[in-house]
Image (tube, rainbow, N blue to C red; front, side):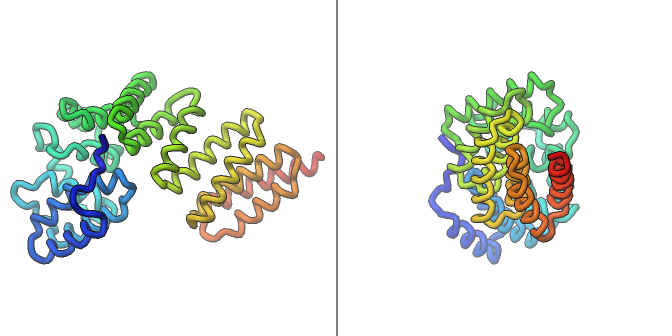
Length: 307
């Protein structure tokens, strides 16, 4: 089972249907945004979801149609980056005044991921408690949110247990997106994350998440490098570099090259290390990466001076 089914419309048809509805029936447009929320998120189509939600919200303004409170909340969740402050406040009020579980299974997860980091822990726990008696997918999502870093104040052991429970439930449901989110949370809280990161990489590749795959490859390569497994580290950094260049992800390219430089310095190949850093410094508009490359260049110069 997966929450990501698209019903009887494909992605382009959803966009067209929402566009038509915005011209004649805003209630239908809002319902479509809610109906396809799970489809968008489980297929990595957050940009498409945001564009649709922004269009509907621009037409609705600060008016919440009667009986469509949760639908409005989902639209604000998707369009949070550009929503008006008053719309965000209306969404927050909807959450606070809802006394029972959400009607859409996906709402608890999307709200938690987008607005949870900015909400008091008591509010998050109240929302999770109200929804923990839902269907199998919702129960898995509640456990995911209970353990996800930055969402709750759970003790490390409790967070690990909640995330492992969520992972097991999403496995049973064959929901790869939920599994990926659980693994992504677990990698941040377990003591030995190598196996978790490896499984997360496989899922990210399957879900065609280029940026996440490159990030995880660099993270696993960092682990290999610290363990002295420089060949394995070089392989992962190189794979991440290839993905970053193919998908035009300059931050990923920079991270992979800095990692390759460190691995090369570890093997004594200082010219290769310097070449990778020069390539990073040639990339525009990457202040953080440039700073990291300069620090690595300082370490490289020290290695050359002591050689």
